[in-house]
Image (cartoon, rainbow, N blue to C red; front, top):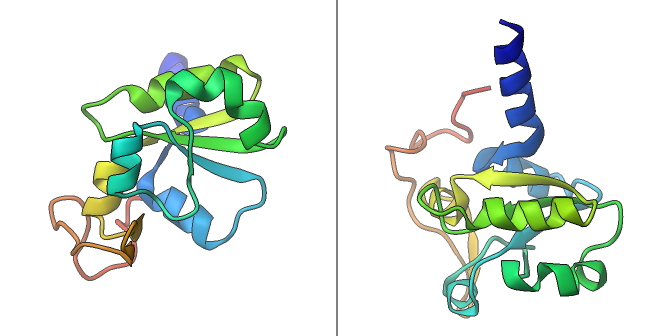
Length: 142
C-alpha cells in the first residue's frame, strides 16, 4: 500500500491537468510559467494564452533568459500520444526548475473548450463531451 501512495503522490507532484492549469492561469498564480515545447509550426497553429514558446531542443540554452529562477514551470506538447512535454520537463528539471507536465497537452486543452491564441486572435472550440461535461466549468474529478 505504501508504494501505491508514494506512486500517486509523486504523479500529482510532477503532473497536472488542463483544468488545473486553466484555473491557475485564470487565478494569475504567481511564479507560474507555462511552456509550449512544440515546433514553431505547431505554436503558430495555436497555443495556450500566456504560454511561452521554448522548443525542447532550445531549453538548455534559453531557459535562464526566458524563465525566471524560482518559477514553477508547466510543460506541454501535443497530447497524450506525444512525450514531448515529458522531454521538456526533464530538461527543466536538469536545470533545477520545479516542473510539472501538463497531461493531455494541447489536444485536451482545446477539446475541453479552453481558449487558445492564434495569429487571428483568441478563439476556442466547443467542448468535446468525451473529455469534459458540455455544460460545466470543471470535470468534477477533484
